[in-house]
Amino acid sequence: MKHWLAILLFAGSAVFAAGSGGTNAPPQRDKPYLILISIDGFRWDYLDLYNTPTLDKIAASGVRAERMIPVFPTLTFPNHYSIATGLYPANHGLIGNLFPGKDRDKFYSLRDRESVQDGSWYGGEPVWVAAERSGMVSAAYFFVGTEAPVNGIPMTYWHAFDDAVRGIDRVDKVIEWFSMPDDSRPHMITLYFEDVDGASHQYGPGSPQSIEAIKRVDDYLARLLAGIENLPAAEDLYLVIVSDHGQMIRNTEAEPFIFGDVANLKDLTVINHGAAAFIYFPEPDRERAVSIRDAINAAWNHGSAMLREDLPESWMALDDAGIAEVIVQADPGYLAFSTSRAANGTSLGDHGWAREVEEMHGIFVAAGPRLPMGERIPAIEAVDVYPLMMEILGLPITTPIDGNPDKLTRLLAR
Image 1 (cartoon, rainbow, N blue to C red):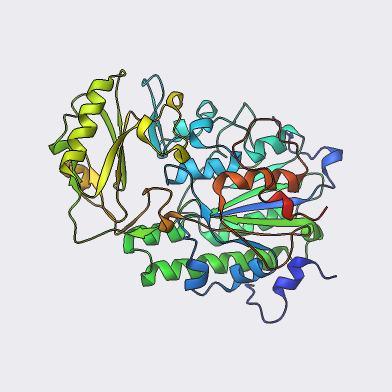
Image 2 (cartoon, rainbow, N blue to C red; image 1 turned 90 degrees about the vertical axis):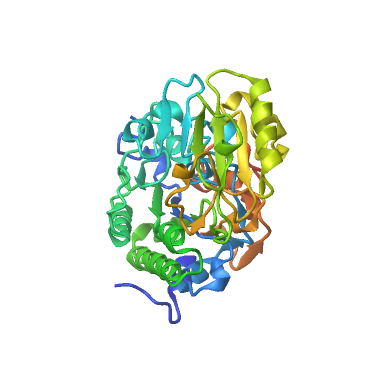
């Protein structure tokens, strides 16, 4: 039977011309290869709405989930790291794009290189750390957590995030890694594209600019497939393609709700995301938290303020995880901010609404030698991807996870 990669490139496909120490341990050299690809902000229904020939071919040669349900909050950093670890944010520690530590003396921020590269913020065991710890070389052209030595173990090859690096240059580097000799060739590679998310924020999902970004990323994938199809390791390669969340156009007819006008937020830390906001207290003060919650809810008809204990059980907001004392969650399409100044510059498209909102749902597509061809499966959760990746790489899961170990691994031929 022809290899799955050859099949998807055949017949008119558009092609575009500390842990491992940098060496694969002998027992790992015959293991399969995995490229984990994230298309930030790629909503679950874009595959059906827009022209994506390369993604369609990959899905036809493998498995596609109806959708992938993100974790709470539906933001970039928590979801990427949940995909990488199989844990909910409350258990892996990356509870937002920006948040204070539990002791409130320092902040994690996606824009702060020092915190992004500080391994103490990251819990769990991401798939690349499991690989490196087992003597398997890993490499990343961007992915949340790959810049830090998690559990003291760095990746063999990684890049500090820089959105000025063109997508084709990222792809070409992955092809270069995949072309290395088998003793040093990475078995676990990550690749990240932010094009769709950026265009959807600025111009709105469904805009000509966002559709062009979708086409551009599909072309990146075509370039990747063309570059690796004839390499010796292609027979043993798996692709896992995900997105961290979807996107939704905001309600432009409704002004953002300014909850600082109705609640006393003095001396509190508020992280504004628009679709959601998180209010942190320097010290626990339940009476004040209740007062703030009730004041917001009395004045607002398009969302709700909740104490951490009020959150739906499916959001997995554990009390000891450092999650905010009060969470302000807008209804789909609506926005809320602590101040009018914080509301300035709101984007046309956004995410951060509740994980149950279908526009927040992302994609899952995977293909490889042991996966069935053309399989469509029901919705999965972001935390369900990790067990599949570990099984593909032949690595044991040695730490607790939240994902369902059988949800995707059952698809692999034994």
